[in-house]
Image 1 (cartoon, rainbow, N blue to C red):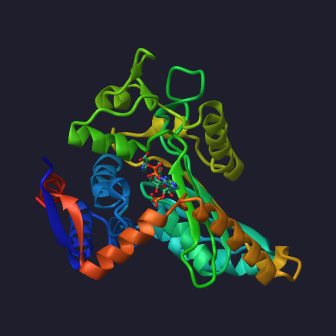
Image 2: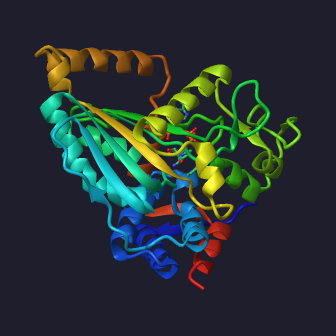
Length: 338
Ligand code: NDP
Ligand code: PYC
């Protein structure tokens, strides 16, 4: 049985900052990365919490990135904001560009942020929730590495390509979803492997193109998109909007230039923001009430909204002052300091 450790909330940040500094990340990157890892761990997002420190360290080791590289947010006289991460992690670039994206969205009603030349290893919900906290609706997407087969295909062409959306709700948690367009995130398959558990059917094929439930065979073979050809088409859209459209790499190209297995994918990111004040015909309150009626109708049936589990975990963990993490994972994370 997996041994569980109670980890005090303050230790999440301390451990993350120490591991990242030890790996070679400068303070600005280490803090931006830690903010996201802390948010994910607090919300019990196990595949994209502290577990991602392995990917951050492996990226530093194999790609030799500059741990102090400063992103550049380019001046813009339109609704398109561009941030050049200059070969660093995306999170600092997002942090620095988000205020201009918000300002542009309030001005134009809709605006886009294209981040170029970045490594991305994390969950997208903290980024779209930064927008919904500012009263905007947000949509974010990134390619990754070509680990996934298109519907009807047999080998990796597509990334795990997450899509995240957040809708602001006055006085309530936002409506947010954030998922890989592969049936499982790669990080989730890695956690199944650590736990020695078989995958559900329909998640992956092995290197000979045969269905597999073995996590290692899935990692060596190709992951499948969710929803068959529908998820496959969405995944291709993400490749296009966060790749060629913004003059950046596809998952195929990211995989080709990667120097080490396990490093974070290298590519661009696309974030779109919408200001309800510009779209709601002066009836923001009425239209918000209609959105709330929809949410209530969903909940009345006993269904749950996406992110509800996450928000509940956050409240529970904040109240008790600790998160639960597997002892084995905790020890492996501490070993990153040696
Ligand atoms: P999950 O399958 O765990 O969850 C997907 C979404 O669906 C969540 O918003 C979740 O809410 C919601 N959800 C789950 N079950 C239900 C349900 N029964 N009813 C309603 N909503 C539900 O996500 P993935 O494993 O696909 O992705 C995990 C993370 O991995 C994401 O944060 C993603 O951004 C990240 N990722 C990052 C990549 C990158 O390249 N940077 C690549 C791929 C993934 P809740 O959280 O409340 O359960
Ligand atoms: O879980 O698929 C994934 C992933 C890729 C990059 C970061 N997470």
